[in-house]
Image (cartoon, rainbow, N blue to C red; front, side):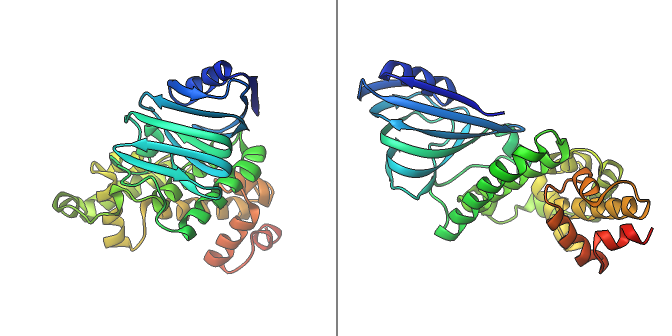
Length: 302
């Protein structure tokens, strides 16, 4: 469900921005400002459409969440850790790292914002630290934006009440964000992670995955079951199975979907959604690659 707030006046705009992003102290601004904020949720992720006819400069208290953006028009600037950043229309960016004071300015901005907390990030990777607020490349930025648009406009309206699809979509967004912005997960393996990446780690992780494939489990859950860090689990799967924990989970769920098809336990679309696929076409492509036939062929043969 979309929530929309529209206000007029700098004081009202201040109250809205401070309540949803970070507490601000305006140092200058246009008192006739008009602000519109439309928000939709996909699990723990919030998608905002932020814009209006307004101008301001402000200092802000540290933000608790990660706020990523895509500027459509207007101007936005941020200063944190001594770095000045000026955003042009079309750019993708991280506003400021959480926990850092900042200053910001805006002039008639129209932007799409994606907001999620540290807990969401921790489900995918251990102790991540973003090392830049700008994407690695224009191509990475375009892929990130395309993922956000797909999740907000296609997945969210149809599958917002499906926990497994919502969870998978959330982790896809986080994984794409980690691949887009420079961060500490891109560095090499530590000695401890290499030491922990042994066969017993894989055995514990595989047993947990196969016992819990129907549940909403994360990379962090798998690592806890394996009794090592997320990165050590990832290295163990690469080293011994030439895959990743989440890819192995998808393989197990695809096998479960195959069993449902052979038992005629619902339509192709229903079975795809049951095992975490928001798009039947993606499910069909993965199924055909694994089994050599389409899901509908398997269903009809039963």
